[in-house]
Length: 193
Image 1 (tube, rainbow, N blue to C red):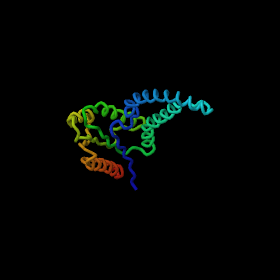
Image 2: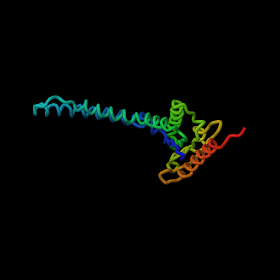
Image 3: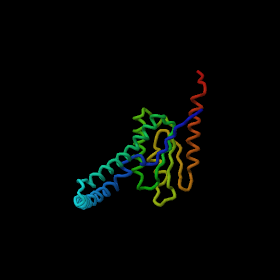
Image 4: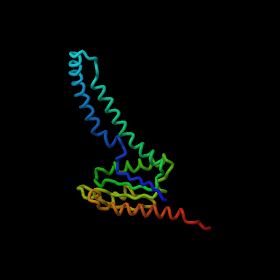
């Protein structure tokens, strides 16, 4: 039985810093200030009740730190799963808005680096590109996205999509499936000299 592992990446979803740090720094600052004020009030109440000192702010800081570490480990978990199963094919989904182009390029470079760390080369793995969210305002032309993400010696198939409307999704998955089947048929066919 043929068992395939398809890695579907959507932009910067595996990058904990990009996904969280923008709001996390501001939110963390504000929340820590609030926690310190509540900590003083809580200390006074606990003192009145004869209870020992307990730091709300230290407890919250520990919980937030654990949550951030969990989010950051997500990328490591994806890489570990890919290493465990081996990556047979990749669907790289890129957001189409102009303001997402830098993140798309960085995520694509991260994909290549992560595959290299697994001793794999993206050029040797069947993959397709999906330019998603084409229905939103301020989308970059497909030609520009092709220049940024598919500007290689051998270009790969790319598809436009509006995934939440199921537009372009079937075409993308159909193509990667065909590419994977062709690869495995070629590998399993007897090679004659």
